[in-house]
Amino acid sequence: MHSLDQFAQGKLDDLQRRHLRRQLTETVREDGIWVERDGRRLLSFSCNDYLNLTQHPAIKQAAQAAIEKYGAGSGASRLVTGNHPLYAELEALLARIKQTEAACVFGSGYLANAGIIPVLIGREGLVLVDALSHACIFAGTQLSRGKVMTFRHNDIDHLRSLLAEHRDAHEHVLIVTDGVFSMDGDLAPLAELNALAGEYDSWLMSDDAHGLGVVGGGRGTSFTGNTQIPIPLQMGTLSKAVGAYGGYLCASSAVIDLIHNRARTLIYSTGLPPSCVAASIAALDLIEREPTYAALPVQKAKAFTRRAKLPEAQSPIVPVIIGAEEATLAASQMLADEGYLAAAIRPPSVPAGSARLRLTFTAQHPDEAIARLADIVRDKILVN
Ligand SMILES: *Cc1c(COP(=O)(O)O)cnc(C)c1O
Image 1 (cartoon, rainbow, N blue to C red):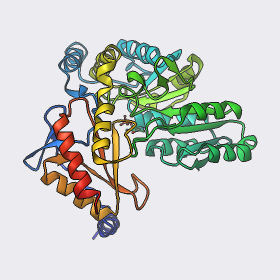
Image 2 (image 1 turned 120 degrees about the vertical axis):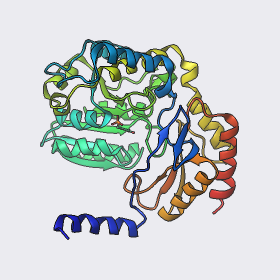
Image 3 (image 1 turned 90 degrees about the vertical axis):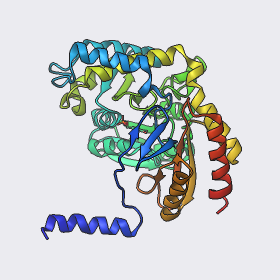
């Protein structure tokens, strides 16, 4: 066997032994909540399409019209000829929703984090990251080549002690956290984090991938009613509740201008297809106009946690933590036999020993199906 294949096979065998091997499973998403897998129709609790906007007729139409008018792709990086006029409209809309001076749209949330962090932090800098932050935040911190330290999840006191000890050794310090934690569904204490960042002349960046569209009246985790925590760097994605694809940063005009000049994932990657940009505009319009609809996913998640006797949901994401990988795979299979898609999430996506089912609730999940799922989780999964 070629040494390359030997290497790959060895790695795969090891993953298999530890119940950590992953497989792509062909899945047809028919509409907002139903999927087809292995010839079976399953009700999905594993999509981040919280508002079911991937299938919304007006949004699909906006995307189709953009394809007809402008074509399937964008042709080049935004810095060359890929900066379609639709981008200006989308960025103005994002800046208005987030109440910042400006916004910049990237190819994806992953590309946004991998691009933004190295612009702000270099070899001499320090990045302090919540330990449960998303993998692409850690990718961005690695690319920055600065010093990276994690603080215990949502632990303000730990962050304060790290700042007290290390702040002065670095010219610039960036603090990064998920707004809604992607695998746990809990919220970051953004007001306290922002105050602490101010105290130590550090910069806070929140990643609101799972907040935009579904918490804070649809405007994200930094909002309570109409008041906003003035976080200087608000990053997020257009690929989840917004239902299209792309990432963004909302910030001051100076920061966004610097991003245009320095963010390598923006400069050296092709612009989004115009259809994606058009779909995001249509989706954000809808989210702005319909805060009651935007509130539905969290309401449904709360109904589930009440009935399953789990801690109350704070977002549309509810973890059912099982622990062992094998037992988690078995629970996922059992739910598939009951007609539900609930993906097993294993390390390294979550810390060792905390494998789980990650359930996501969407606006259109029927209440009866949620109640039945809660009964199964309570009586057949959590009892073990
Ligand atoms: C999904 C996710 C991303 C990546 O966004 P994509 O647009 O899917 O690349 C970034 N951060 C968090 C917290 C996420 O959950």
